[in-house]
Length: 349
Image (cartoon, rainbow, N blue to C red; front, side):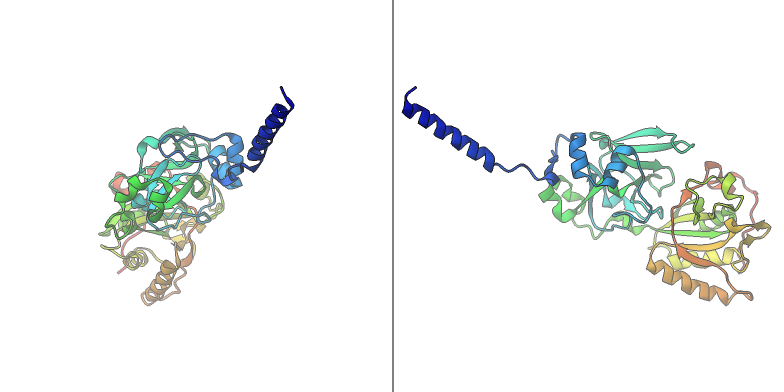
């Protein structure tokens, strides 16, 4: 090769090196880039770079975030929820409702083919785990205590999903879901609200509240304590801090939160501390677990009105709602399954 040839080759190599030096690596937040039609799970290195510690622990290590201390439990905006790992569409705001659990809850999936269900025995009881199909992310669990017509409650970790508001659907590559929200004034599921009340043995409280017109569903459980995943055998000892409670899902266009509270103060004695009838213990205390400030205001006003009906001081507590643990199956709708069974609840006026 001539001297001029070496000079020319050297110049070409310099240009190649310069072009490679100028090429910028993709930003970390864009790895992995979601493929809207072919959802794939990124590598572990990519996941660790692009997920927060909590997102990684929830989706990859099956962790559970704190109730009422997560991003989407009270989100009422219109849009869809996609897998934080792969971007596959999972749930829609049109199926979201306030379950009182402290986590985003949905009556059904947006794309059922993007979910897989698995038996989970990790907490000494059988539950149904929900995972995403393509990324195999742990999302949460599904329970049979949701409102009709599905009767399901998909209880999902906020850290496992990303919310795409309806105005960003086209930009983010989900324009096919825009028709879900055309002409809609708000999510259909927002029409349902939740109340959580405790007034003694939950069998009798549930049996009377479930008959109020506008109540869509009820379930009994344990809340207000410190013990995680309590069982009846633990709660009945009065050492867990939990109260026997009822979660009520209702249609506010038919009945109101105030009306439900009026029934509540009529069906039990709110002047006895940690007692209803012969049932004694902190698990039988009178409590209104409020989900927001509007409920708190209504509860305090209802308590004042109730005091006019009772000679002794009304001792009902009004406190922030905490995690609600559904009770064992045999407790649900107990007096429906066992007509004539034990109850100390009746309308006082």
